[in-house]
Length: 47
Image 1: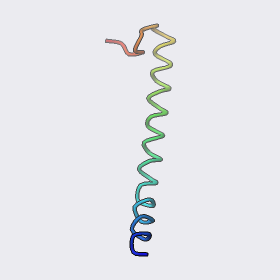
Image 2: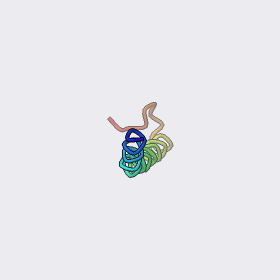
Image 3: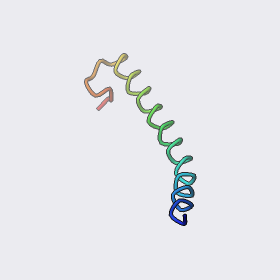
Image 4: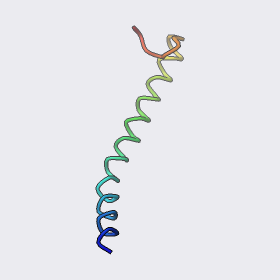
């Protein structure tokens, strides 16, 4: 029972972190896609 509460607290603590991570990853992917379309480089970044 004690483990369950610990796991629940852990999950609740991780939710904002995961949400932020997903949002950040989405922004990065979007930027890479835009750069790829604009510059046609394999990585999508200007070096």
